Amino acid sequence: MANIPRHIAIIMDGNGRWAQKRGLPRIKGHEKGAEIVREITTFCANHPEIKILTLYAFSTENWKRPKMEVDFLMKLLDNWLKKELPTYIKEDIKFEIIGDISKFSKNLQDRINFTKEKTKNNKKLTQVLALNYGGRDEIIRACKRAKEKNIEIDENNFEDFFDTKIGDVDILIRTGGEKRISNFLLWRIAYAELFFTDTFWPDFTSNELKNIIEEFKKRERRFGGI
Ligand code: FPP
Image (cartoon, rainbow, N blue to C red):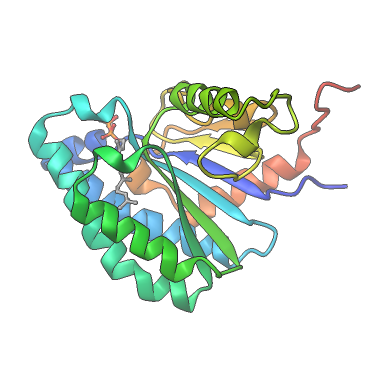
């Protein structure tokens, strides 16, 4: 039986290089990248096998970027959520996040929570944005939470202690040419099929995603068995 691409996760890399190659400021790459987020989300929402799309939008390391770029990314996210809400509602998409947003401005936190609340009963697809997210941080916080509750963790119950339960990843894609995981979803990618493409995120298309899904369906997944 072919594999089912239930959960797709993407490290959206290459926005800055895409812009620089065109003599544009890096932020133009992020702007174009946001349009691709819309295209890929719509594609996933229209493929019933795909239930979760998790996107790495801001890592715990991204605070090291110039303040102007960080501020721009925050503003972009705020505007984007404002603009996308009608689409989430129309397309039956639930909006979720992983990561620690307590470092974001109060306004942005409100916008995120408002979007979550308004879409919480939507069913077709869950779009998860990883915001101020780090995979190690998520694991450590889960361990602390289990300890506080004095519950012994095992492989089956561990995810219950994460902020958001989204389950294992089936396909992990990284655009932009690097072959790294960069602290993304460490616990949940244990058996993910990995795909690395040289395409910069702003050039990524639903057609390329379609080809990746086709290849995924042909791959043999043994989950440690034979
Ligand atoms: C990596 O490219 C991308 C990011 C750090 C930010 C991701 C943001 C977006 C795709 C746009 C905004 C998203 C939403 C949901 C509104 P990079 O800047 O590291 O590129 P580089 O490696 O070429 O420098």
